[in-house]
Structure formats: structure tokens, C-alpha cells
Image (cartoon, rainbow, N blue to C red; front, side):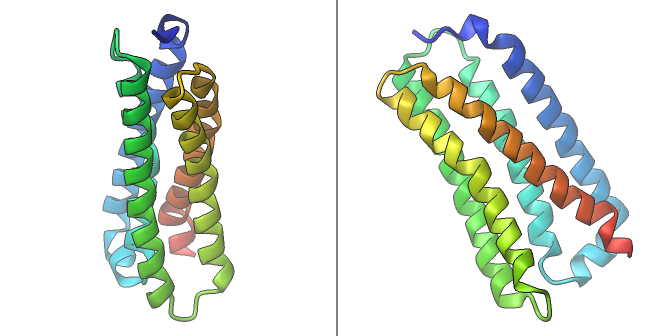
Length: 163
């Protein structure tokens, strides 16, 4: 069994923050919907923000399920991380084809943000899969980078879009 009792407060706070930030993305999209739909790549950026926050929310939720074997937690962590990473990868590919006039570094930053959030989650999932609770510590940088990526994308959707 994992020492989940020691992690419950952190996981609950992370889940709450992720849920709140997901709501912020929906507000940003509703405020600037016409512009987001008009500019190539911004709808994908909105989706990436939502995915970044929801992956933290779902990861925290599944890890807090009581009495799960560590291998089940690992499979859930890896599954959520892989699904989120794959959906963002699709968004990046679509944006790379439609970025008409946007600098290449915009795409590079989006990809880097996704990788920085995803890699610690994969490492954490692998540690959990081999039975090591050290994997829980690896989730934390994944959460941090997910929040950074999601907030950066939301900033673009709320502020930069009107410049």
C-alpha cells in the first residue's frame, strides 16, 4: 500500500486548484470566443490548458482512492498522463500545420511546456509500477509544470489575445 494518508492534503489542494483553474480557462474562452476561433491555433491552446489542469485534477483524484494496490495507481497515473500527452501532441501537430505566420518558437514553447509537465508524470508512474512510493514525489513537478503551462496558455487567451 502507498502512504497516501501523508499525501491527502497536498493532493486535495492540487485537485482544488486544478478545478478552479479549469474554470478560469472556460471564462477566458467565453470572454474571447470570437477571437479564439478566428486565430489559428488558439482553440488548440485552450484545449491544452484544460488538459493540463484536468490531468492534475484526475491524477489527484485517482491517487486518493483508498486501498488501491500500487500497480493500479501506477496504471491510472500512466494512463491519464499518456492520454493527456497524446491529445496535446495532436494539438501541436495541428498547430504546426496551421500556424500561418506565427514564429516557430511559439510552437517550441508549447511543446516544451507539455513535455516538462508530462515527463515527471511518466517517471512517477513508472516508479509506482515497480512498487516504489518515490513515484508520488515525481508527480509534484508534473503538477507544477502542468500549472505553469496551463496558466501561460490561459494568459494568452485572456490578455495577449487583445493586444
